[in-house]
Each structure stands twice: as structure tokens, then as C-alpha cells.
Length: 118
Image 1 (cartoon, helix red, strand yellow):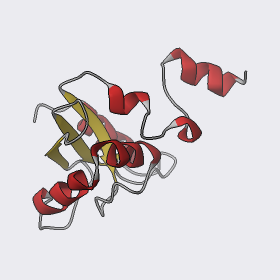
Image 2: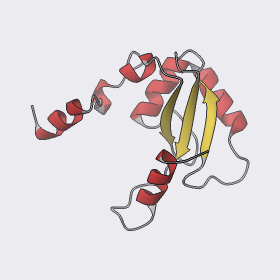
Image 3: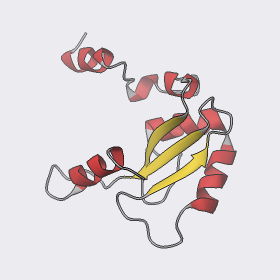
């Protein structure tokens, strides 16, 4: 086992290759799930978002498209949808900025999405 996979398994995380519709994230018995999305709000992009899309069904993307802000998205925006076919009742979709090796405020935006009182 590599150091990276040992680190991932320590936290129960899943590598991209392991994330699929039957993934643990889709089976969580929780009130809500957190998901990161790009500025286009497309759930087909990104391993976790794809897993949520596959588990929840296409209705979650349709709802996200209908409730997302009409103004251009900004890093740190959060949109909430229902969980649809997931056991979670809602999904919090946070718009994160593309990581630029610490050369901009992407880390601060990510922290703000995680530690928010919205």
C-alpha cells in the first residue's frame, strides 16, 4: 500500500477509481452531503459530483440548473438541491476555484465554503 493510499484509507476517503454510483458517499445516512462543483455547475465533471449525479439521478442536475444563480458564479457560492434518489435529503454544492498552487485565494475560498454559517 502506498503512503497516499494509506493516508486516504485513514480518513475513509475514496480514490477517483473507487467512486461509482454504489459509492459510500451515495449510501450515507445523513441529512445532507457536501459537493464541489465548477463554475458551470455540471455534475458530470469531477469524481464525487459524478457519483452523486449517478446515485441521485438526472433530476438533481435539472434542479441545480434551475436554482443556480443567474449571475456569473463566483468561487464560494453555495447552491442547495434536494437529494432525489440519495438517502440524504439535500446536497450543498459549493463552487470552488481552480487550485493554482497557492498563488491566489483558492484555499481561502475553499475554507469559506466548508466553514460557513449559511
